[in-house]
Length: 520
Image (cartoon, rainbow, N blue to C red; front, side, top):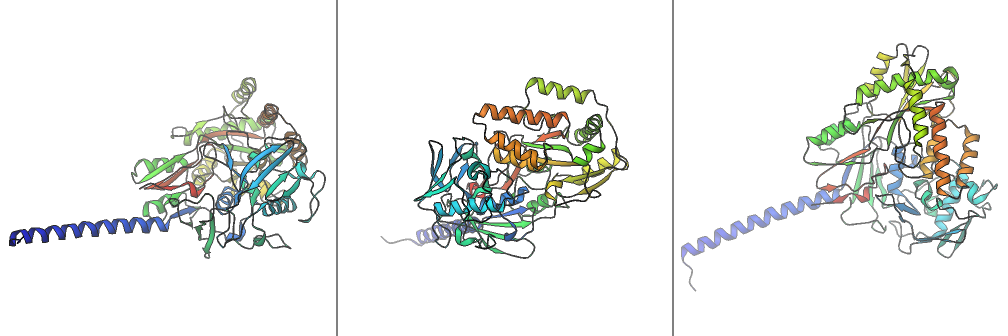
């Protein structure tokens, strides 16, 4: 058929339009693919090299977040707090023994196959280093045998084929959930120095990510390990940890606004209220909130408890609580609390206990004790605002910033604060690892000897109801003395740029980057 000139022009025009559409589509697809391949730039509050992170020494949240993405534990919790497979894909109690069978298909990025032997060595290493803060299984598995070397005898740890067998002596159901803490991460044997036991290889790891590169100043590039059981094509294929200025509490939000970071984690130093308020005006972002498991509290050190009577501590606590109410009382997500644990959480006070604490607080006058006393602000967002309010309402007080005294090494009497204001993850469900951390950080006022005895009795209590009662009584005691005075409670929040979608846990402050999904 002969084409007229007009028809030829129409066909040419149609072809041009089609070509333009294809070109634009390819550009969009290309840019989408490029962005996806580049993954996420994450605002991160630390500026350390990878070698600074070790599962045996976790004191602060950023350390935990880094490690949970680079290493994997034997078991994991899903976003609702349900126990599920981790490095071990099968777990069961056989009599009084916990049997954990390691997956056959988990390898490091360079192909090293992880086995039950790696898991056993990792636990032995943890016991030798004896510094972990999220659960102590030394007494459960080794009895009085204090491991000094990785090959020392520990009757409670055995390997049969590709199954790790833990023998606590009796069936203790909380043992398996405790193994979800990243303290119990599996570290490939070749990545451990045989003499020092330090981790020397952060490339061949057990986690869904490995360290691809790092720079001075703490900028670390993590890359997805396609050999990992949590690997998905739609998870971030690359994570860049971008250090932020913690002295400027809006730095992360400003970087997000400028496009230089794509994700603010739950442990960002930005105040939850600032993230929530920013996200309301940014339709290009997605917000994640946990339940209200973050408690802002006043913690008295041994020094402070000696210098201040019980009544004075209650009075000072009331004054500081009023400062927090004035600052946060009308902010979305914040609520006043007189408990350390969530009201309906496991470990929350019984009604009569709560009434007794409420009455003690109500009967206390608000006191402006300040002169001659030292306060430390640690891991609390909005430090500058709180500091200004403290100086205004507590004349003469000295305020510094730093780590919790229990994690600061040996402080002199002069440097030791009298009290500390801290924000901490209290959890919602029974969590031995988190409970151990709270005790280690001084939240319940137990010295090392008393803490060891209490944890030993707790972990040897087989019935969960009895263990919860022990936690509740410890909680009540810490509030009655008082060792701590809870101020306010709020959620942990995270924010990501669309089209990424957050599927982070509701009952924990964890940030498993692999659970973030491309949602375009």
